[in-house]
Every structure is written in structure tokens, then in C-alpha cells.
Amino acid sequence: MYSVVAVVVWTGTPFYTMSFLAGLKAIPQDLYEAARVDGAGRIQEFWHITIPQLRSVFAVVVMLSSIFTSTNVVYVLTLTNGGPANSTQILPNLSYNYALLAGRLGIGSAVNLVFVPILAVLVVLLSKKMLEGKNT
Image 1 (tube, one colour):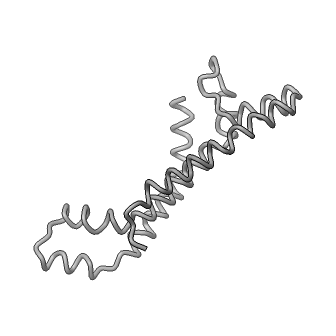
Image 2 (tube, rainbow, N blue to C red):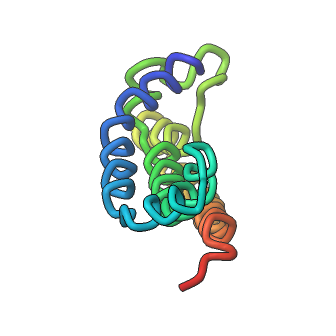
């Protein structure tokens, strides 16, 4: 499982880094200047300006990361094919194995019918958690 996690993190890092860089560039410098005038240090600027301004970027990155990681069959299929002893088996990979390799289309579809609502609930919970308290 550690090898799969390492590969997924490695392949996703450029996209998420660019997302955070764009979010950082969108923060107005006036906020930092006003904080410095008020006597705030670098750590206070980070916790009270940078993190709150990046809240929506955090929400989008966490949701996209969850969706991309949980639906991507390629990494598990290529690296481990769910083994050893099904320790890296994920639901999309299980569906693929049932439907296409074993020819049991009904069970493969049933796995996806269970997986999609779980993923939808995960996305809704993540979006509510990440965006709570945000002034829109």
C-alpha cells in the first residue's frame, strides 16, 4: 500500500502545487502590509491571513484529490493488482476485476452502485467541513 500511496502522491503533486501557488498569488499584498503595520510577525501572517485566504483552495484540492485517488484504477492495477492478499484492493479495481476479468458484469456493476453513493457522501462531507464558516 505504501508504494501505491507514494506513486499517487508523486503524480498528483504538480497539479496540487500549481493550485496552491495560484491561490497564494491571489492573496492581496495589502493584507500582509496592513498586518506588518499592526505589528504581526511572519507566523501570525501565515495563520491569520494565508491559511484563511486559502480555505477554498484547500477545499477544492481535498475534494479533487479524494475523487481522483478513489476512482483511479490504473495505479493499483499496474503496481499490485490488489495484492498481496487484497491489501491494496480498492472498489474500482474490484469492480474492474469482477466485470472485465471474471466476466461477472452484474457483480462489477453492483460494486460501482455501492461505491458511487459512498464517494458522493464523502465529497459532500468534505465540502461542508472545508467550507464551514466561510463568508460568501
